[in-house]
Image 1 (cartoon, rainbow, N blue to C red):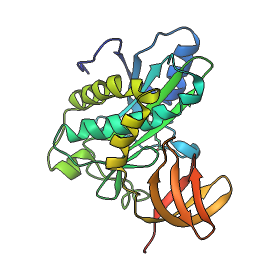
Image 2: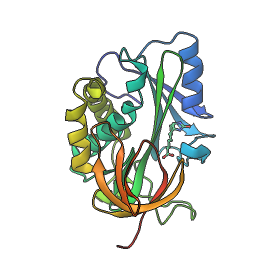
Image 3: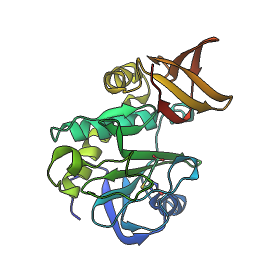
Length: 244
Ligand code: BTN
C-alpha cells in the first residue's frame, strides 16, 4: 500500500498482526520515532474499547495505529481522541461523504458506526488505533445492524491508500490543537456531534445514566442534563440514543 503522507508520518505494512496497537507499542518502547504508522492487512486480535473484539476483514478495511510523541503536557493527551475523531470525519467529508462524531470518537454515518478509535498511552508516547470500514458490504450478524462502510454510504468503492492519506493529512493539522487552540478543535467537533440534543442512556463510572445531551463542555466533556441536574462526563461507554 502506498499512501501519500506528510512528514514525519511513514507507513509500515504487515500482512498480518495481532493488534496493531500492541505491536506498535512494542516498537515505541524500543525507540521508534514519532509518526510511524503500523497497518495490518489482516488483524487477528484487533481490540476495541472495553476490550471488545474489532472486526476488520482483509483487504476491505483499514486497521492501523499511529505513534505520536506529543510535546504537550500529559494531561492534554486524552484530547487526541477528539482530534482523531475529527480528523477521520473531515477526511471522509473530503470524499463528499457525510460523517458525524459520536462523542468521544466513534464515527457515525446515518446512525451506524463506520470507524472506531482506540487511544492508548505509554510513558512518553501515544498510540492512536483506527479501524475504518472502507469497502465492506456484508458484516457479521452481530454487528450487521449497527455497522456501515464508506462503500455502503457512498455507493462506490474507495481506494484505501487515499483514505489513509486523507486521515493523516487532517490529523497532522488537528493534533496540534489540543493546547492553546483547543476551543477551535472543539468547535469543529461540536458541529459534527451527533449526540447533541438527543436523549441518551450511557454507562459512566458512576453507573447507568439517562438524560439529554446539551453538548460538549470547554474541556471536552459531554454535558448531560439528567433528573438530578447537569453532569459533565469525561468518559462513557455504551452510549445509546433513546426515544424522546
Ligand atoms: C472501538 O470503537 O471500540 C475502537 C476500535 C479500534 C480498532 C482499531 S483497528 C487498529 C487498532 N488496533 C487495534 O487492536 N484496535 C485499533
